[in-house]
Amino acid sequence: MPQQPVRIAPSILSSDFSILGEEVRRIDEGGADYIHIDVMDGHFVPNLTFGAPVVKCLRPHSKKIFDVHLMIAPVDPLIEDFVKAGSDIITAHVEAGPHLHRTLQAIKSHGVKAGVSLNPHTPIESIQHVMDMVDLILIMTVNPGFGGQSFIPVLDKIAAARKMIDAIGRDIDLEVDGGVNPETAKQVIAAGADVLVAGTAVFKDGPEQYAANIKALRG
Image (cartoon, rainbow, N blue to C red):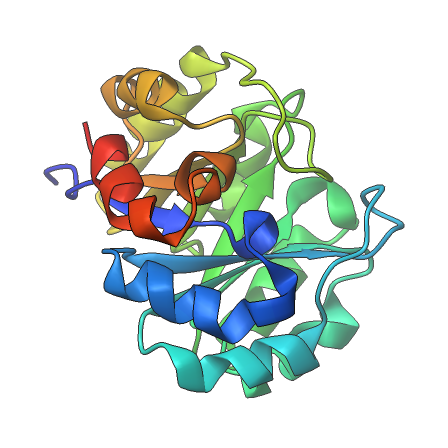
């Protein structure tokens, strides 16, 4: 199966929280393919961000895909809330609980796409036996919990994930999140990624530059 075109998923973690709806509209108009929403619980990761009510409030501001990255543990009790809030893709971490297969089943039972995320140290082999269930694989290239971190070059892991996707022949997004900028974007695209999450690189120069910054990431 040929690799999909590169899509850009700006992370609203780097946006102006005081005008979050407006920021979502701006990146939508600027050419975002997905809206990446980082949900952090202050427990699984050392930060606290948005809950399902915020996702629900943002939903009317864009028809783009809401790519909701749950950095929370446990995950399963909150899946339904995020589905009802308007998520299109819900991604859970391998490390967030003992029963990844069950979590993916729960996500897919609601009719939304299921993603799985791996922290930098987690081997790609950990998802080998759920490849038939996932719609998105998210490779973290920073330790999750904060925006603005430096890229960890786990390019071999991205390439290995691309091989796994190609071998199974399913339509699975290969997403990379962490320290993505125009330079590192070229590296992760070359390794096989086709969805790039970027926060600082999109939002750093103010709204007038969102479209240009998104375009610069496409390589």
